[in-house]
Structures are given as structure tokens and as C-alpha cells.
Length: 589
Image (cartoon, rainbow, N blue to C red; front, top):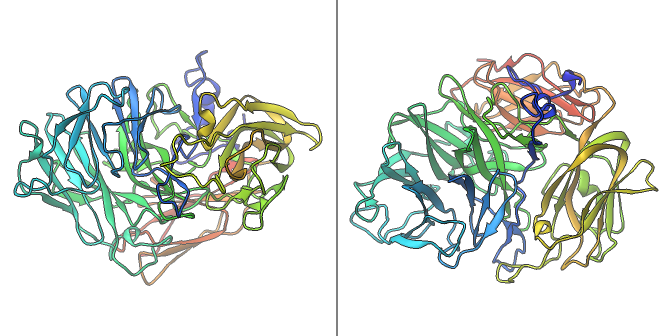
């Protein structure tokens, strides 16, 4: 194994090392490999002018030995044993038309509440979606207004079993919090406390826009809370769910209601570039082994601004109290371990890169609005569409050379489906074959996805990890059943590596801090054999944990703080692997 070809970051070992030996050097069951977005059957919108799928504002709650995933307007929720395979649960009790639900595990039961509602529901058996009962219809934000409701609520249970409510979603109003009286209908014990005000004039990431460029008030929303090593981490989202810069910032304090101090490295969850963008309005939780994760909203926003998906990122804490969500290679396959791991010493990424980016595509047919080239352009915001949804439509990618193929992700775009949430049941299963070839003429099946009886192919972001890596130059997806709309793909993504060397190391980084100190442009010369790059930055040279993927050799970002200095480095990745950047380059005072 050539370690130089794999993903390295400072003081981090390689995921591929413990992936290859089962994380312990002993024979054990295979570890789970997934990629983003989370592969569930996303619901179609109710807006008949849009017709796209959505799920957003997610939270994952461990309960018993399972995980429960709740999200905006999906008219149910999901359960999983392993954070990888999810089963949908419907409910005729919960008002699931409410958005941004808050869920907590409290004294052996799950409690649920939605935005713009003052009711609290509970169950001890969430696998039965019909078992929820009303726990309180008095939960609210103010003692003197019991029917006043909140937006983007979050319920937090402290170690002493005291319960707190956080909320806020506004361009004017702050994030607030209050302790709830669990003995009297979960009503507030006091007037609410203002916790986070707007500071877009100082913290550039709070500015609206795909590059934080807009001169208008920001939106702070999606508060969440966790406790770690005696400290309270109050998270919040900005600058808006429809923007590439959607992320989560952080304040830290010694009490659930503060006072809180802004974390200098905010946002701790950010993903402004790459195949999919956005990492905002999420929650952070511990799995059954003690590993921390952040689940958050990712952005498509093409058919309408609320067209969104859900992403999952590993989280770690630094010795000085910092918290970071790792999104550097979140577009690539990563490992969900079955034991406690130290993310500061073991990377979750497999080392497989997207070897289909920019490669030539052949198709059975296409439409002018959605040409074949969209399927390898490294963007979830564009897609290829066949002219029909008939069986036999196909798409293939020429990798340009013989490669080792480890996994294939099919991302179906639902073009022309015209489906809405009131069309029940949603009859949109995908039935297809995955095939490979060495010459483009003779094809061999590597995965048969034609049996949709279990509903698996309702999931539009299917990652197929091959039981055994294969050698191939061509990869093809063939539609095998008549679809409601047209056979269409955001991207056909092939993961693996070629036999060529990893890209050359990026050098001579140029940093231009603009007169508006919230904005910094970073550029570098093209690296030989590089397909794309990962720009890293941080407030210390040994802590470059914020990242942005790009196919370009320069990028200007506006998410920096006016009074903070930063260090930068650039990784290069390509068909031959990943090469870590040179030592960090600082901004000038």
C-alpha cells in the first residue's frame, strides 16, 4: 500500500490502513462504508410548482441501541442500527407537517415537538409510529403567553436531568433559551435568555449569499446544544438554507444558558464547495461506541430553494475545547466504525477518490436542458436526463484508462416525475443494472438493482460498494423498468484509483486578504495529475480543520472573522490518490 497516495492531514493516520485490516488487525466483519448525502427515500415537496425532493434540519437521536433520524416535512422518521441502513417509520399521531422538529431522549422515552406548535409528544416505543401520545400542550417560550410558539426548537437534557429549550430563526431576532419545568407541563421556568445576537459585520460566514457576498441582514437559526468535558457547546446555523455557505457556528460556555463566548474557529461545520455544498442547521450526537457525529442540511436549491438533502460528518474535540466537523473528503466514501476511534489520529476516509470527474460520457439519449456532460461535472446542482423513462435508457462513463473500481454511487434526479407528497404511495422505484467493461463493448454486471420489492431503490443516492474491487475502464447504468418520469442522474460517481502517481504537491500558495477583512482569496498553480483540490484553513498552523473542495486553482471566500488571522494549505487529489499540501501559509497581519 502506497501511503503517499492516500489522504493525510496533520497528525492523522490513514483510514485505509484500518479499513484494510478491519481496524484491529484481526479477522472481523467488514466495516460499513457510506458517502453523502445520506441514502434515504427523500420525500417530494407538497408544492406542485416545484416537484423536487427535500429533507432538512435533521437530528439523529440515539435511543436504546438504535438511532432515530428526524427531518423537516418527511411525514415520518427513520430508524437505523448502524447509521448506514435506514428504515422509514410513518406516524398518524405526530403533526409531521411541522418543520425543524426537536427530539430528546428523557427518562426512558423520546419526546418530539415541531416548529410553530406548542405541543409535546412522547413514546417509549418509537419503532411503532402510532404509539406517540400527547405529553403537554403548554410548552412555550413565555410564562405569560402559554400559546405563543417557537421556530426551530431544540430540547436539551443536562446531566442532572434538567431540560432546556432553545429556538430562533430570524434575520432580526436572536437565538434564545429557557429552562423548562418538567413537573408542570414543560412550561418555562423564567423569561427567555438572549444567547446569540447577529454579528455579520464581524463574522463573515453569517453574511448571506453563496459566497457570503450579500449586503443584507443575516439569518440565525437552528440552535442546538451539547455538553462535553463540562463545557456547553451552543450551535447555530447561518446564513440561509438555500446558500452554498450554509453552515453551523459555535459558542461555548459553562452553563446551559450562558454566558457564551464565540468560538474563534467558527463555523465548525462548513462545506462551501465540492460535489454537494452546505453543512448547516444540524445537530451533534454520540454513537453507541462514543464517536461524535454531526448531521446537517446540504443544498441543491435548483427546482426551488428548499430542495435539500442530509449529510453526515465525523466530529472531534481539541484539547483546548474546540469542536470540528470533518468535511474535507465528505464527498468521497468514508467508514462508519463499529468501535471507538480517535478522529484526531484516524481519518474516516477510505482514500478512494472520484475518478469519474470530468470524464467523457455516452448516453442512450439526452435533452438540451440536461446534457450528458452534467453527469460528471462534480455538481449535484446539474443533471443529465434521458429523453424518456423507458427501460433500456442508459448512461456510461469512460474513465480514460484502466482503473481499480471500489464503489459506484448512482444519484437519480427524478426529472419529469411530477410527484408530490400528496401522491401516496410514491411509486418511483429505480430498477437498474450496474455494469463495467474494459473495452466499451463487452459488459459485465457488478450489481443487480432490479428487485425493488424492499423499497431500497426508492433511495436516490445509492452507494454500491463492490464486494471485490474490479479493473475497468467503463462503467454503465442501465434502466430496467418504466419510470414515472425520465431516467436522469445528477452524477454517476465512480470511486477508486488508477495506477498513475498521486498529484504533485501544491506549492506557492498566494493569499490576498481584501479590504473587507471577512474576505480572503487563495490561489495556487495547477498541480500535475490533479483533478481537484481541498483548501484547508484554521486559526493555528496545526489545526487546519475547515475545508473547501474545488476544481479550480483559486477561490475567494467571505466567511472569515475580521479580527482573526488564518493559516492555509492545499491538498491535491486525482485518479492516482491524494497528496497533502505543504506547510501552512499564514495571512499577513
